[in-house]
Amino acid sequence: MRLETERLIIRPWQESDRPVFHRLNREDEIMEFFPFRRTPEQADPVMDKLNTMIAEHGFGFTALERREEGDCIGFCGLSRTDLEPFFADGSVEIGWRLLPETWGKGYVTESARRLLDFAFEDLKLEEVVSFAVHDNHRSLAVMQRLRMQRDPARDFDHPGVPDSHPHLKRHTSYAISRNQWQSAKTGESA
Ligand SMILES: CC(C)(COP(=O)(O)OP(=O)(O)OC[C@H]1O[C@@H](n2cnc3c(N)ncnc32)[C@H](O)[C@@H]1OP(=O)(O)O)[C@@H](O)C(=O)NCCC(=O)NCCS
Image (cartoon, rainbow, N blue to C red; front, side, top):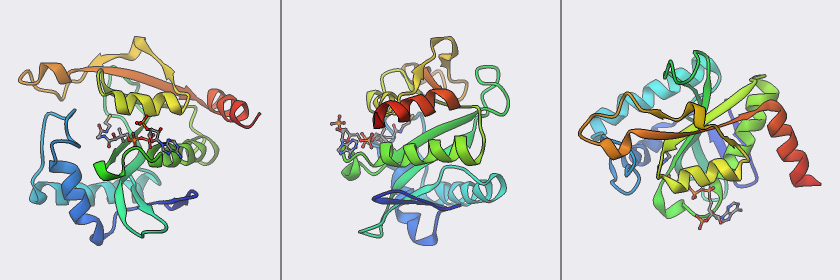
């Protein structure tokens, strides 16, 4: 799988991405809304598993490479959720995590727009969902920028968050259907 945008390449992970993947799994600023940190030794098999899933499904949490600089800056991708009963079996989420020095430049929104086109036009999905810890405002702002719709009926307490981190349990949900995405795009170009 390989997709391109004006500034970015969306692709599977490469060996040279490992130092970035390690940072994405252990830095407090990046992992503020996650109840765990991974050592490089713990992160390495996760990166390998992401590539296996990308190869198997034709999509996954894919790396983002800047076309001009040639560097990996994080990930943005589509992934099957494993969160029944909150999301039905077969649901696909869109998610993202970037190195902090690359926040605030629109890279996630740019790549997510391309991924939503891919989701609806190539994968023929009916809906894409997204969710974040209730006060992860930067992530929720991306969902809003993409014109995803708030879906309070699917807000949930994440079963993977331990009782030691109560403030990270409550998750806010958004979703967008194929029709809503088409309308959002038409509205933008009008
Ligand atoms: C969530 C996260 C990916 C958002 O990154 P981001 O850079 O803010 O997202 P975007 O790519 O949409 O960029 C939007 C920002 O870039 C600015 N921007 C600059 N150029 C832009 C452009 N061409 N297009 C859109 N936005 C642009 C926007 O004004 C906005 O800035 P603001 O935050 O000051 O309002 C990032 O904060 C992150 O990695 N957080 C840690 C991991 C995490 O929590 N992941 C989500 C778990 S659910």
